[in-house]
Amino acid sequence: MEAKSVFEGRLALVIGGSGGIGCAVAEELARRGASVIVHGRHEPGQRGQSRSAIHQTKSSFTCSAQGQELFFSCAFERPSSFIHALNRFLVEKGRTILPTERVLPAEPDIVVCSYGPFIEKPLEATSPEEWEQLTLANLALPGALASRFLPGMKARKFGRFLFFGGTRTDTIRAFRTTAAYASAKTGLGVITKSLAVSGAADNVAAVLVCPGPADTEYLDPATRAAHARLAPGGRLIPPDEIAHAAIELLDADPCTASGAILTFDGGFSP
Image (cartoon, rainbow, N blue to C red; front, side):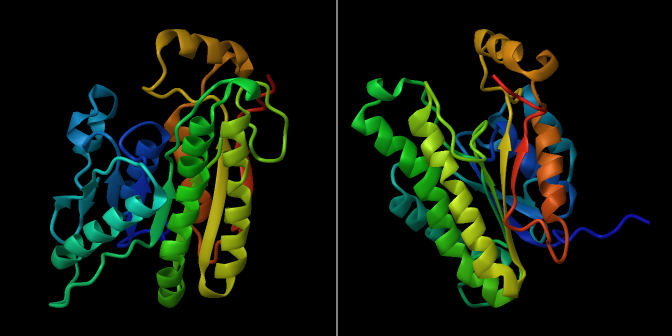
């Protein structure tokens, strides 16, 4: 008999969930019985054939109480404005999915951040604006999400955070062409381990996954071919494999993997 998932009946928020690894994570959570709020640039029905199969799963991207899609569309500019917009969205959804007459936020039990712009430039060619953009999106936003949702998770005695770093950002390394991006992504390890310590007594866990080159719809043919030449065996990692492995670590009670920084790169060594 298959064990019941700890995510069944819970509410998940996936930032950057409309495509790539984030979409695969949202699918995996939905398959395990969670209702999923998806944030991204495209609503689920607009993502094309690469993800159309998700609509064949009745529970995917729906609130189980009302059978409605939960899609949060918000362009990212700064963490503060993003969190304010998210708060308004959660209050609005709380009117419809919570069994109460009070207007309360629909507080997620699982928070995933699979969002973050990527810029490939030598250190000396990276502008102040690019440093600001990369740091705010790749480091400050996950940190703001942690600060926003950790108190509620601790009060409810359950919570899970999943963050995604960049390739080879599991520890401090030198980078010739991606120093700004890698600096921000490497900092996610501090947030992850701090969450693990802060939430340990209240069943709140956090894991950071640093995937290798993944085969997502965001890659153009030339980029896909270039990444494949560097990848072990010439194989890019399917997002579904990354999502399943990451969610499996968190689908435990208690979650002994909390605080882990994991490389899912198949031995990638450029």
